[in-house]
Length: 139
Image (cartoon, rainbow, N blue to C red; front, side, top):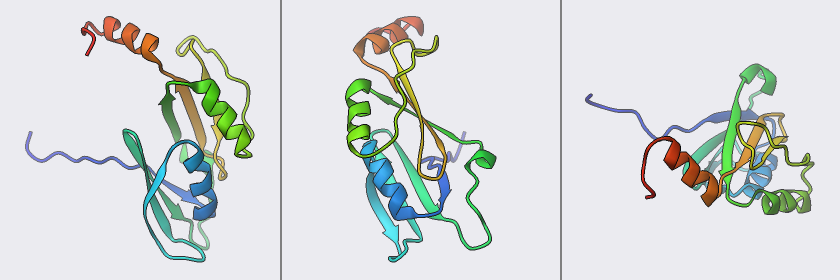
């Protein structure tokens, strides 16, 4: 294959870029660049292994997270501590669930615009089990 696209960056239409930045910073994102002030037009945020872009919805383009059909799935090595941090940051967070596909724990919450954010616990135990499952030695 010749040219490959890269740096996949999901873009979310949001009502208030600054408000969304505060939410995503609690998850570990860092604002890399932004445009505009009072209100911001857009911002690009990075986290370990990923990025998102927040774009202020223009007049006539209401934010409708359910119509977007996006779920942002992230992983963390200490889900209980992250949950406590989110609660301390004023975020409404449900109890940790333990679904069959993520028995070590998962949080399902929504950002300020209603976008679904899932966070799975992925520690060393889970990583080693996954490496075994796909037939790879410990890296």
